[in-house]
Image (tube, rainbow, N blue to C red; front, side, top):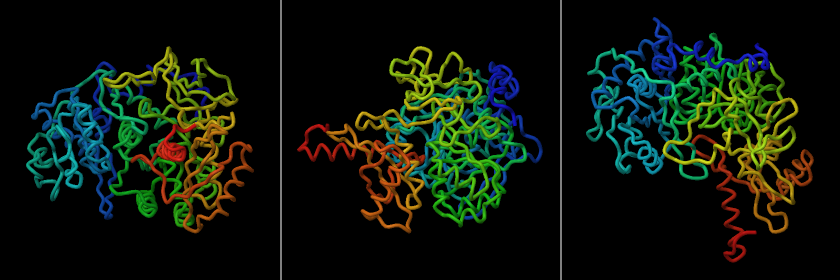
Length: 554
């Protein structure tokens, strides 16, 4: 294991580029980096598992040929380098072939999450100006209600040969194309992905990911995930979102490592089955998925104990109770990683780099980034003072975010990119995540981060999930309210609510316990699994306004 300090101090952007790229930043193609350069006889790129137990194995050579056919079709239809092509597809081999084929043609791939409804799809397609959208029979009907929808390619019927409503048939079209297509070379600053922010507090904003970001994605897989040649790797995240597209597709394939797709909804049973069937040793996913595994107890810990070598988590802060459970029950280290669609993962407890690990901290800056905490005047804060998490752009050569596509932003101030998240620098140089700036609670003059309260609640055996918000209060500005999803073995009683309040109060300060607890069957979440605290907060604001006869809440 390399030492973190040495890795960080000895970091060279140019060395990293030359070591990780087949070409140069003056002539680069994402399909070459993620497929062609690894296309050796028998070298596997994809393990695919269907929800019905069927499975397929695809090699880099097979995907090289199929991506050439996809690129040939797109070019024949007039798609030019830099054009956007969207994919509304589940985790299938056709999805991976579409992504690689779009890249091979020098075009830009735009993901569309399959749980999106027509309006969410319409916003993204219209904002990007996509030239084509590739979908399947299960999702095709959503496009009927999309205004100004681009031409559609449908994977449908037996081996995708059946046309749907006069669309182009994926397999019929690609099989007319030759299995050779010279990759279109682009420059490092040219885009290869068109992403959209999650849109939890407003319309999703578009951003283009440049080709040079591949270097950062591969670096994360090497340093933070510690992806080794002998590993069997599975990232649970859907490629319709950044963590899946960056680190279930681009990152591992850029290293020439096979990835794993499971084409089905998350369940404890399917997760355990896939891990055991494919001998998964390196797992990545979200805290939401991990909490569901924990809730299953011995049904998970029994068959999976000792199976995994490394586990990584992203999307939301990792509660200490989850960390302890994985260590005690599965005999594996799980590490927290922080990032955004705009930056990729930039703050990590690195599996492959030796550094101290503080329970509950998001970790240390990834090599090639300098992560700082700023006050309200955008001055860097010392340890122990909460502020805004930011990137120092003058010392972050791996930061690739160019700003939003066609949308103004105030996220860039001086030499800094402001993430909009609250954090605190620790004495050892690590950084602890507090929450979204809008999530921080002000109660009786104190600032309380919801993460600490949620982590204390999760330690109670009755609690499966929780979300903590600030509820408007005329005396305290806000009071702390917790929404709790219980383990099925517990009943939502006033006595249990009081027990949970006292449980938190004993672990935190007297001002930081939830004065109100409401039990819910489930928490509101984004399609990618992030808890939408703002929905709960808005509900409480509306209730306070109604209680005051429509007057603004205090």
